[in-house]
Amino acid sequence: MTHQHPLVGEFFGYIRGTIDYRIAVAGQVDAGKSALINALTGEQSHISTETDATRDVTGYLYGEHSELLDFPGVGTKEFTPGEYKKLLKKHKVKHVLYVFSSKIREADENVIRFLAKKNIGITFVYSKLDALIDVSGAHDRELLKREKNAELHVTFKKIIRDPLKYHFISVKDGTGIDELKEEIDAYFNSKDEAFRKRAGDTKYFDKFLSKKSNALGARLLTPGFKDLILSREFKAIEQKTTGHFHIDESDAAFVGVPMPRVIDFVNEAKETGKAAGNYRKMIGPLTTLISTVLKVRKLNVITFILSTFGEAGVRTIYPVLKGVFEYVRAMNDMAGDVLEKRLKEHGNDHR
Image 1 (cartoon, rainbow, N blue to C red):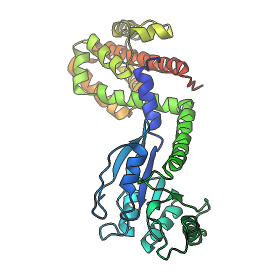
Image 2: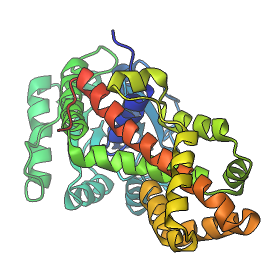
Image 3: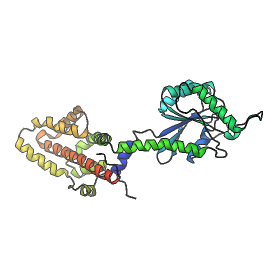
Image 4: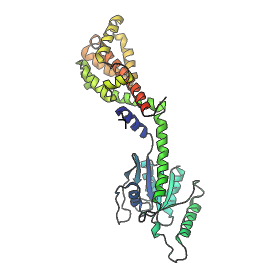
């Protein structure tokens, strides 16, 4: 397996951050939500014999990067339907496994109508199938399941278009778990497809590089970095920049260009300055250069420039400032070239 370049890993992490890889496991009190999560993930979520043992929302890894959120039960004094809706809003869930272990109650109706109104996807689960019995003994389990589905359909047919039927499961004997996993996997596979599309989309490629540049700006427009410029600590400046982009000599060779060096850009800026003569007229273009490269506000850049000039003088430090940020621009461009070529290795051509 090819080693993933850190810049590619960071880009993929950025793309995943734009996609919601979570499903909330919510529903009735004491319906076996935590036990269901255990069965689905293999993780040991908190299970107690006490009713409504889950009082906080906890996430459990499902697969490589998906997550199931263990919600408390609805309808208690602490989690009335109103409070439950606030909890759902807080966590911005987009899909819910709503777990029942008894008949539909008013609190359930209230929350489910809220989910439908907010266009939040719902998968209905009827847990503890092994305990589903008719006390009179007149009906077999299949008939009871049909009755439960009929109740679900009649209650919500006016507000939910999706097929209104339960996934009947039993964590105790494993019934229905594999079928439910198939539906969950299909949901997360759709998220993986969205990931693949975005990883190959120029818009997301450019947004990521802009974000990287902006983050670099937060590191460079600081008193500490100004001190490096004033003391001509070019090696330290290069280390900060290459470390930010995860780029080294091998990456330069990979895209077929020489590794940029600060001193080369500084020397070039000195020659340009001599020809131009008036350094003060160059403050505007310098401000535009830095703000464009780092994707930051010009006011912040002007403050940084004037502060630096105030300590060392325009004529002395201008070529150093210009050279340093021309170097940063070159590294920025190289990062884009490296990322693009590395993504092609992974089969994610953004063009």
